[in-house]
Amino acid sequence: MRMMQALKRGKADGVILHKIDRGARNLHDWAQIAELTEQGIEVHFAHEALDMTSRGGRLAADIQAVVAADFIRNLRDEAKKGIMGRLRQGVYPFRAPLGYVNKGKGKPKEIDPIAGPLVRLAFELYATGEWNFYQLADEMYRRGIRNVHGARVSLNSLTLILNNPFYIGLMRIDTLDETFEGRHEPLITRATFDQVQQVLRGNRPTPGTLKHNFAWRRMIRCERCNRSLIGEKAKGRYVYYRCQTNGCQGTLLAETELRQKFDGLFQRLRLDEQDFSDIRRMADVLLSEHTKEAAHRGRGLDLQVRKCDERLGRLADLLLDGSIDTRTYHAKQRQFLEDKRALLDRLSTAASEQSVAEKVHNYLELANVAHLLIRSENSDERREIVSTVTSNFSTNKKDPVITLKSPYEEIVRRRISDECALSRDATRTSAREIFEIMKRAANAELGLESHQSPDVPGQVK
Image 1: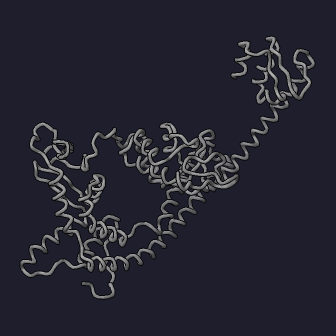
Image 2 (image 1 turned 90 degrees about the vertical axis):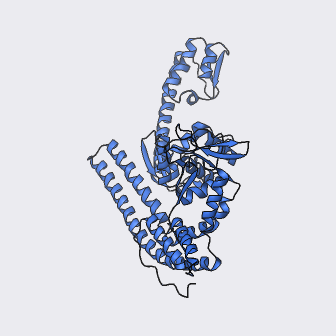
Image 3 (image 1 turned 180 degrees about the vertical axis):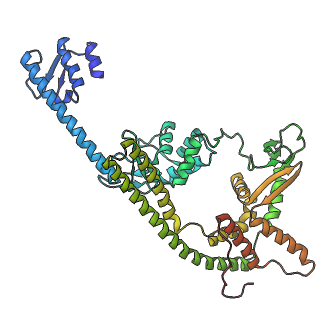
């Protein structure tokens, strides 16, 4: 089109084409080139002796142009067949999206060892609802993610990435309005992808840029008005959290006092070396039982995946029989493929999903390091530990009200009770009691029924 405009403006006396097919990828373009001769513009061919100013030369050129257009049309159809064949084989025949690398013709894309984890992180960060596009683009650039040209990933490209189901193992071709199952390894789970879609649709708020990174921003609730306390600095270094609602004057908490309050609570979660070892040994017995149960669940999920494949096969038969139209087929196919991907996600994690024993291990580790994290100078670490172990963080005027999550709340209460009982020569909370508290909390969190703990060999101190 730029060439045609330049010729019409008189920037050249004519045009030389390699062959007819270079100007006849479709008959519309050829008609425009043929009209140039009527405007006094010369048209020549390097490998064909055709006189475009004579009737015979025009006729011969038109015939060759029609043949060339037919050849290109057939070539395009064959290329489409090849592309469809690759898609049905589960191979993406186009350039690998960011986070994957090409491995050659006919081979599935593989996760890029460098860009792949960064793209996964981009999904996980955006799914939290705490990042907008500008913040996410800046963070990904800071961490080293680049587009195929080595430049910064644009906001438009970031939007395409977050909307692309390729990262959960599905290949959506918009021009065909079809979705195919890919053989490549998914980069993220279906659950993470769905969370991102909810944020993109505005179902979860995305904040603007933070002016101050206060450790417990939007976490402390005023019990009088049920609003969040606002962090502010005094004298350039002291941090206070204040309720800005009219009628709540005097609702104020100093961050240093809060850290001391948390430090006192978390000190009561610490275990001595013997108790720590005993609880780990009890949890290991539970872990062996979980491994057997996970294998049984995996067989059940595998059966459901095979049923999805059978449904896809029956759906294709209905299309061939003419029982359903193409639009219905594509809609149902997409639904079955998404259901299958969700099952495959569950199947891939069935053997490694978190068990009661692993939950106990996590409780155990966190209980012993909580007092160290609350003393950290990193505000994100302090925020993370408080968010993890507390279920209620509020204040009534200047009195903080802190309720820990289970099992930490139960452990602290038992420890406080023991401290009072020690004056009456009572024994302290045993490792088995703490283990039972943690196990009940793990069962409740995982939605499992509580069961009797197995006998642990050896004497528990």
